[in-house]
Length: 78
Image (tube, rainbow, N blue to C red; front, side, top):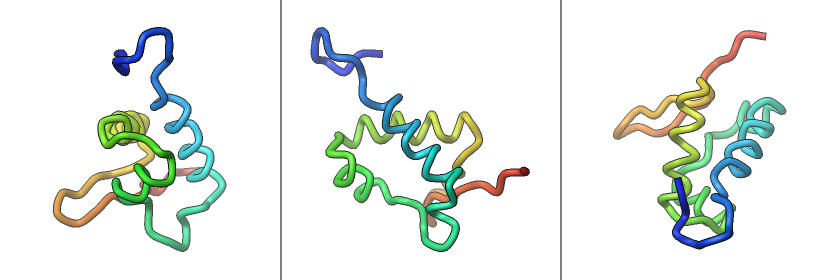
C-alpha cells in the first residue's frame, strides 16, 4: 500500500505501533480511546491513514469499533 508520495514509506505502521504501546501501558484504561478526529489531529495524519491504523488495530485484536457508539480498547488477557 502506498501513500501517494514516492520514496516515502507509509506512516500508519509507526502510528499503529505507537498506539499499541499506549494501550499496553494502560493509557486508555481510565479515559476513552481516541476518536478518529483526535487521532488525525494528534498524529497530524490524514483520515485515510488513521483508517488504516484502525484496521490494523482491529486485526491485531486491540480495538473494537461499535458503529454509532465509538471505538473501544478490547480487554486483553495477561
